[in-house]
Every structure is written in C-alpha cells, then in structure tokens.
Length: 216
Image (cartoon, rainbow, N blue to C red; front, top):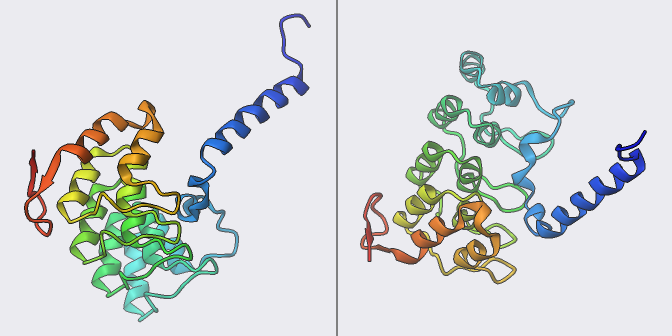
C-alpha cells in the first residue's frame, strides 16, 4: 500500500533511535539503582518487601509487630526500606524508620538511600534522609553523588536543598564531571539552565543548616 512504511524499515528506524539514545546515556545506564524499581517481582521479593512497595501500611505494621527482620534483604540485595524509597511510599518509609531500619545501607553500586530519594524526585524523602544523617557527599562506585543525580533529573529545588546541607559541587564522577559539568553536557531539555544558575550563584554560609542558602 502506498504511503505506508514497511515493517522492516519501521524496525530499522526504531533500532536506530534506540541505538542513538543508548550511546548518549551509556554512562547513566551503568547506575543500576536508576532502573531497579522496574525489575519484575517474579519470585524475588519476600512478602514484607512486596507490601512495602505496595504502600500497604496496615499489613506492614502487622508484620513489624511479629518481629520480622526489618533489615532482611531480597534476592537482589535490597531491603524493604530501599524498595519503599524507590517506590516513593513515604508512609511506609516512616514506618520502617520508626522500626529502626538501617539507614546506612547501600546497594551493590554503592548508592545510598539519599541517592535513591533524589532519583525519585521526592523532596520529602530527601529531607528525611538528610535528617537521618546520610552523607550528602557519598559517591557510588561510579563517582555519582546525590548532587549529580539532582542535576541529572533537572531538579533545581533539590539541588538547592543538597547545597544547603553541605553538598560539595566540586566533586567529580569517574568521568571527571562535576555537577556543573554534567549540567552543561545535558542540554536544555533537562532544565539545565536553571540548575546551572543555582550551582553557580548560591553561596552557603552554614552548610549544616537547611534553608541557609544565600544568593551571591
């Protein structure tokens, strides 16, 4: 039929587009925790983890009352707290924290709960784990800090919060990129202009005090 694209050509065009994007984001794709929430459950997750991800506070509470190990790991090496953070289940996160869940835990890539919180874009969770004392400058094994991730997702508000909490904007990842370098490399599509302004213009008088940001 005239005017239609053959299936083989459609597949070829799609493959070309995917190949281009894979090339651009090849380094980003090395960060496994960016995609871990999309891993099919199959038989990997214990009931506790499944309930945490579902946000079912009632049944999470029932299991906690049965003295379940709050820090038990699933087959992928994630705790229920990590799963709840990745799923942005803030109520369950608070439940698990009250139950003394380990906030110092990292995944296999060295990502902290603060990395996870930034990745989800949840300002509330970022505040929670900053208040829990998670190191704001902790880098994963690829050298990515929470500040790098905040730049990656184009969240100027989270960048401000991290800077106010003492984030070091001069730290480089394994590719030699500071958060500002990363900002410039991402282009306009990632809200990079606003984020770059925050990184360049803000001065921190008291890094330990949230809300102490002061424009130069």
